[in-house]
Image 1 (cartoon, rainbow, N blue to C red):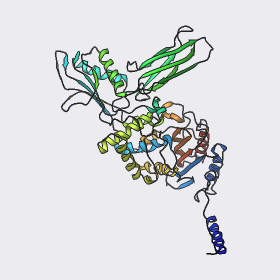
Image 2 (cartoon, one colour; image 1 turned 135 degrees about the vertical axis):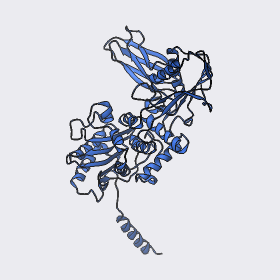
Image 3 (cartoon, rainbow, N blue to C red; image 1 turned 90 degrees about the vertical axis):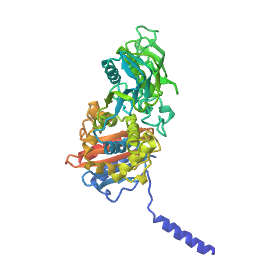
Image 4 (cartoon, rainbow, N blue to C red; image 1 turned 30 degrees about the horizontal axis):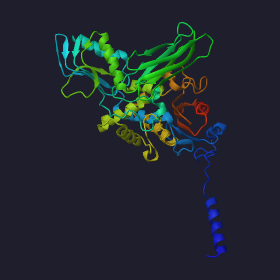
Length: 493
């Protein structure tokens, strides 16, 4: 081939490449569906924001009634969804388990009661309930007292074998292990209050009675399962308040350090415990003691033997009610527990692998293209999860015909509504706008990622199913105003 012919072929190749559409993720091309529409122009102007320079924005807006795409930008680009992943988990859980599903915790024995003495072991068998509080363990102890038990000549054994032994999802960062949103998942666990952050304790620091004294530290619930090292110093009123609370890795030693001024407000922190099964057992043992029941044996973990007799059975609230703190407050532990529960119920194995298989099968039945996504957990804490905005808006459109949809929608945070268990993570956003009360959507935040997906009802009465996924951002809090502006636009239509 001579040089002239080669040059001619290069020219032809360059001409052909020029015909291939160019996609610039900073300035992407809108779909033909939305190009030129007034709605499309409004959203495009919002997306033309310097905060998104160098970032990727995936946006999808559908008619909730018909499923027609009204606007999309990078709608099929797979992006990290953060806690929008919970939309998939919650829909699969409702479809698999049902909105009336309840978790069970049983107290059993392999012994016999005679003359107020229970000779044999007592077992607390957990089946995943993330809502167990200290008062629930009190109720268990009271049931034994009412049966006449004053002493247990045997061991108190916690059974968490309903799930596997994996405490953390695949990609959880070690830096998240002591945070409330990174708490270990166990079939037998406990929560400190009605936010139901299972596997955590609340550490509260107040100033001491005088300067130079140690700070006053308390735990909720009171437990001996964790050890507190108090290095907090009380300083004069008006001085700097700087208190840090952390747990040493692989232990239940919690260190509080820093300074707290006289008359200063409290400092509170939710700290995840190491091995929550033992935490639940410690609360149960305290409840037994408080009800006058002595334990002659040890407190252990193990498996309940076949043939053990049930002495008491506790049931959680139904799933429809659990979904409220789960979705409104974006509770990671609830998401991962539901994944394991689906695996146990459907596949006979309470593991992330089996549970995610169940999630995938369910969302596929909702029309989501599961071959185009990556699922690594149920909460969205993983930076490996990948879902596109169009798949979220597809899910939001198709689940509307499910009989459990009212419970699903009711669990979503509501924009601008200050009541915590209504507004949830949107209670301080979009206040006094057209979106207030009219946008119900799941928020999401992990480092360099922010997301918002849900429903917006416009002034005309039309409802939109929308998804906004912002990735590779430098300020994941600042870009939330972009999500809010888009939601307000939809609620203004």
